[in-house]
Length: 386
Ligand SMILES: Cc1cc2nc3c(=O)[nH]c(=O)nc-3n(C[C@H](O)[C@H](O)[C@H](O)COP(=O)(O)OP(=O)(O)OC[C@H]3O[C@@H](n4cnc5c(N)ncnc54)[C@H](O)[C@@H]3O)c2cc1C
Image 1 (cartoon, rainbow, N blue to C red):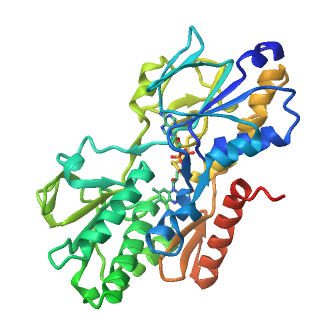
Image 2: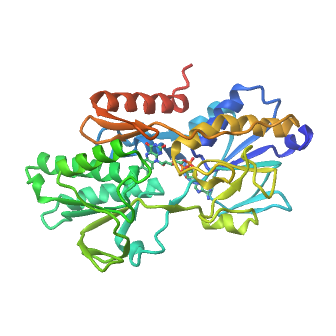
Image 3: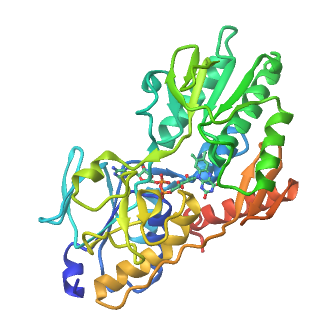
């Protein structure tokens, strides 16, 4: 891609995910040499998932866990198009949008995230709430709190998915619904909480973290159904592959996810979960003018689990490589770390943490640390006074 080519339509970012917000700030900070930057965003407020469980627990307001893309675009000189992308015409180099004319690009970057795959759970679309897209989840969360306040409201709350996100979610719901009940003079012990997971609990984390997580759930009386794959969700129970029925009035799903289906229509090479297969420079294996980052990208040379930490770390390299492609200068490789810090909020002013195969810890200081890291990250995109 020559510099002059990239100046015509410029760089188009699809999705305001964790990597793209950094491209916006970094391209504004770097000398962009007039390369036009456009963001196509389905949601104008982009949620920061690290703080989502804290919001569910009532520790952060809704606006505190979001990046306002309208303000960020204005502050970084990015053209913002509020629309959902649903295809790419690679021959014409345009992105197709719902209810909006196509947008031309010279270089394209995709950071649209993934959503839980509900296809193997019959009835999930009618009787369950998926944790992503987060905007829809937050509205349903308020509806759940309102329903739970009624005498005949939901009492048996089931979270499906035993990764770190599912654990944080059930702990946060436990804290919030019980606090709501206590504040309204109802019995907080009227609720029953369960976590159902196809694999063992937090299987990718080390034994010390796993023990602490199991202890935190047991201390609150949250039932854990490990190695129980849910195949159907009915109005009053979930059914597992082994035929067990687990009573449920409200079901939330935070399971393994799939990339958006429209990516399959682009002709780009995809990983089995539908994410865009990328090389070390974050370029698509099929089309070097298209890059991808975050959960919707699969790093084929160094596969990693889906975690926001990778989307965050990819951001600066993605920005550098987009600029380098536009200028015709060499690209850098992104080398994902093998060990990364894991911090799991337990919704009681404490958190469990760890790193690699051995290190595990917990305490109030861990929550204070997580809170500090998360707020600092978000401030970069919300506080423009500097
Ligand atoms: C409850 C919970 C807690 C978590 N906690 C942590 C944690 O503590 N640490 C951690 O590392 N990971 C955590 N994760 C995982 C983390 O959420 C993801 O790895 C992270 O959000 C991935 O970022 P992303 O940029 O790939 O996508 P996202 O954050 O999902 O952003 C995608 C963006 O693209 C937009 N978009 C989607 N489709 C389109 C479209 N068609 N057109 C235009 N825009 C579109 C969306 O509006 C969204 O703003 C957690 C997940 C959950 C559910």
